[in-house]
Length: 375
Image (cartoon, rainbow, N blue to C red; front, side, top):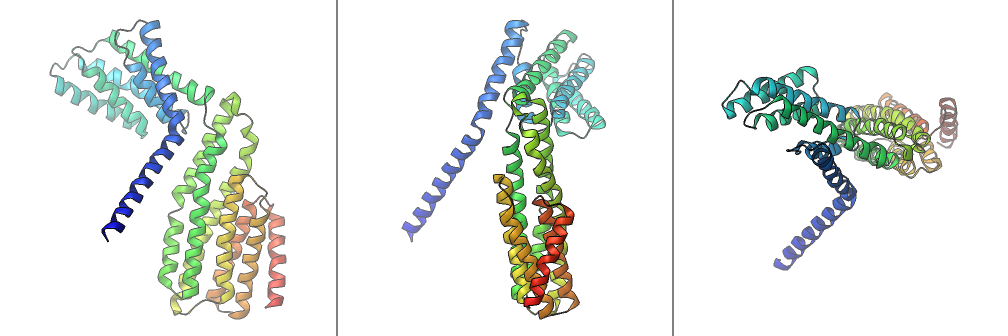
C-alpha cells in the first residue's frame, strides 16, 4: 500500500514537472521579449534621455508586453492613459497632502474612481492606481518628475507595442487554433453526454449535457476575440499579412459553431422532455446524437489542421440519417423534437465546414431520404 502511494506521489510530481516545462516551452519566447523590452526601455530613458529615476520605463514595458500579447492594441492605449491619469492625480493632490499614507490612499482612490468613470477596463484602473502609488510614494511629487514618468510610460508602452505587434507578433493562426479547439471538444463532450442520457433513459444526464453546453459560451467568446486579435495582428505586422486570407474560414466557423452550441442546448432540453417518461430513446436517435458528437470532434480537428472538412461532413450527414430512422421507430412528438434539433445542428456543422446554405440543405435532405427508406 505504501509502495503504491509512493508511486502515485512520484507520478504526480513528474506530471507537475512536465506541466511546468510545457508552460516554459510555450511562454519562453514571451519571457525573452519581456526581458529585452524592459532593458531597452531603461536604456532609452536613462542613457538617451538622462532620466535619473528611469524605473517607470521598464515597468511600463513589462506590463505593456503582458497586456498586449494576445490582446487588442487598445489595451496598450489604456495602459498609457491609465499612467497619465495616475500621474496627473498624484501631482495635483500629492503636493497638498503631507502625510504619506494619507497621500497614497487619497490619490489611489481618486485615480481609480476617475478610471472607472472613464472605462470599466481593468488595465486602465490598475495602471492609474499603480502610477498614482509610484509617484505619491516619493517625498514631494513634482510636475517635472511627473513629466519624466509620463515620457517613460510612453517609451515603455510604445516599445512593447512595436515588439509585440510589429516586430515579433504572435502567430494569428496558432492563436486562433488554441481558442477554437476547446470549443469543438467541449461541444462534442456535451453531445456525448446527451447521447448517453438518451441511451440510458437518464434525464439527469441530459440535464448535465445542457449545463455542459451552456458552459461553452465563454469559450465561443474567446474564439471570437482570438479572431479579432488575429485579424488585427495580420493587418499591422508586415510578417503576418499572409494570415489575412487564412483567417476567413475560421471566421465562418466561429459564427456557425456558435449556432451549433445554441442548437445543442435546445437538443438537450428536448431530450429532457423525451426522457421525462423514463424510458430509453429510439436506437436510431441515440446513434444520431453519438455520430453528431463524433462529427463535431472531427470537424474541430480538421479546422485546427486546416484540412478539407470532408470527414466531418460525412459524419454529420450520417448523424442526420440515423436520427431520421428514429421517426420510424417512434413517431412521438418528443422524439420528433430531438430529431429536428439533430438536423438543425447538422446544418450548422455543414455550414461550419464551408458549405453554402443551399448546398447544405440539399445534402441534408438527400441524407434523410435513404434513411427513411431503409427504416
